[in-house]
Image (tube, rainbow, N blue to C red; front, side, top):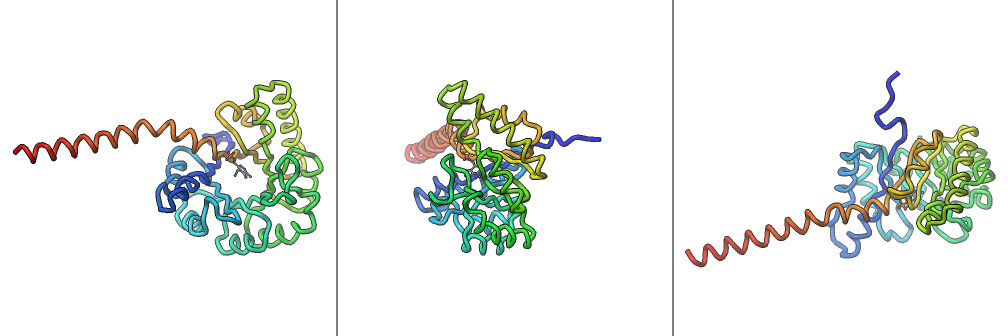
Length: 259
Ligand code: PXP
């Protein structure tokens, strides 16, 4: 049997913060679609975008363009609201990941409060699933949340890795180890409940390996760090090109003047 080149661990690249930079000027550059194509070229298996109620980064037309132009699955992150469900049903992304948007929808750690919101999530999950959209719930690595996600009929849980990444960033070895343990237990519990297991939030080059080692996890969604890191990977080349264009234009102009 041949194994996939990625050994079945998919990478979803979240392009929200390309749109954050674009929106800082209100124009079209940088275009999140171009970033999505580049990410796919570089090995991303899918693209994730979060359409927020306030449209602070990704816009409705970004979602339409992603859906029509992408060659890989689109994972639409959204709040479990009637407005967002209607948008999802219009575009039919491969998957919808339900995330909290308002304080009352989230747990103290930041995952969707599936236990407290269970009744209101039932029709949302049903509507999305009946349109053939895979439903993912972004939850903390907690057994009650996992049981509730399974009872709701979700296809996927995305485990919130924020607490783990915060401990790691603070060089708190004990806290980091305990969060890794919690995530590993949650991943195996979720898989035992028949849920597909994803994870994400705040992952970096330094924190990704611990998650990549967990056999039940099949997809990691990573955004903010990658877009930030792309500045450092790309700024050198962008400045050099600008320098060259300036120098070339000045050189040619001065040649014309003296000729
Ligand atoms: N997964 C979910 C459900 C998210 O909401 C986010 C942030 O939009 C991510 C993953 C990616 O997190 P980050 O941008 O910190 O990598």
